[in-house]
Image (cartoon, rainbow over all chains, first blue to last red; front, top):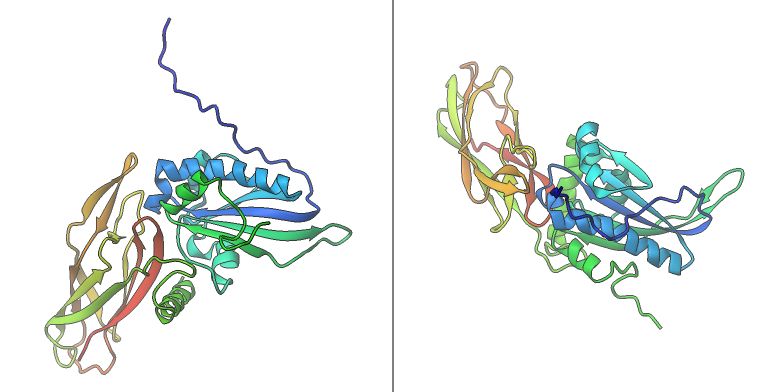
Length: 169
Length: 153
């Protein structure tokens, strides 16, 4: 019997490790919502899925841990959850709250260079010190990519995490 | 929400001060502008007035309708009226329909006007009539914003 089946992607998908990071960690934060038309473009959704793999690989090459975080800007948690579902797995999710979303507050509004735009991917680095009381370095923004055109284009280039003007030996 | 929108306004002001561009970017900052225009009547002696909200935006960008559908950021009017005054009707123009994946968004892509009727006590009022117009302006990205419009006396 012949049945119609969807063509399954052969690309691997990101799977969180659930291991306590120590030292340098690269964090990718995706900001979007169901109310943001460009966030719903299939190419943007595919780029976000692929971005996690590409950035995780670069972090590994640099000896750093990696975490993928999504901040879903919808007001309703149910809608935010539905928004995140097609994007694959994340290490952390901050759902709901519209522009008062805690991750958006921290990385958009409290950052003088933060940009209130969706879709947006932020690549940060921080250093984590474990112990009886954990400590964290102040996160440094490595990349900030905005827009439904620029995000897929950046991922197509391999989602480089170093700053655009960084000099490499 | 007002606090957030105030910060958005400050952000927009910063953008304008920086030349209207995203940091490290070459994209011009999209802009929504508006005016609140008296069509008929006055709060100084009339018990009913009609006003018009004229809205314009950067070409190539759009904002959501009042009810933008599943995919879209709603545009909202928050009236700030003299004591005793209220809005009896708002007439918004029909938005355009734009497909977004399997859904549709209802949007405005260029200049448009909203007509509103207000009623209140006949006594003379010194308080202004104004409204906060909040929106999300989108093209390949969506940016929140608001503008406060005041009715000229």
